[in-house]
Image 1 (cartoon, rainbow, N blue to C red):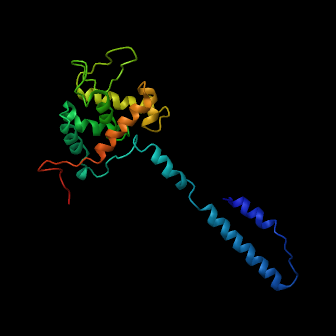
Image 2 (cartoon, rainbow, N blue to C red; image 1 turned 180 degrees about the vertical axis):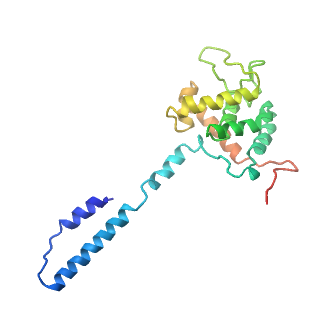
Image 3 (cartoon, one colour; image 1 turned 120 degrees about the vertical axis):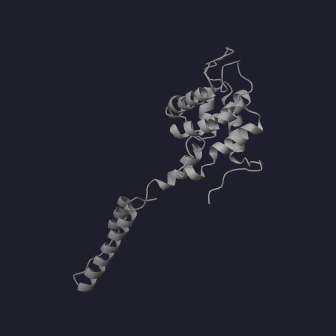
Length: 213
């Protein structure tokens, strides 16, 4: 697509004859006015919209879903029910997952999904570690960081994902995977699976979710 300067250059290079008659000058002025209006229209077009879709699609699972209306925010309740369906000890930390995701501008499903891959949602961890994310477990070692409780683990992992991965250039789950795990592509695929599953999760409890009218 031509930018405004190219449009003006193309117009100015067109051969034309300006006669000394009033009609000729009048036609020339009309054309000049037309091209001026065209340039103003071109320069007023938005320049970022074209890139918004591709960028948001690429990083969609890393930074979005902050609630603006807290009265109808059902994320924590949905997450609690989802984790309970896996008999996960992390279910009690559902509210903390959402709070930390909002604090660090993360997808609220991401940290829970990583726990699903690393420890079957906190059920397979070193005794007393509260580390359901394989956090600090380096190649060749059997254990990593010990947290005092699930809340601390969720907070530390959320902050770490933001500062050590996303702020350093990770744009999607696969970018994180190549640093986070030895088998990065497979790891990211499994994390993506749990993110998608949580996104489409439909609670089956009698009370289900609170509804705001």
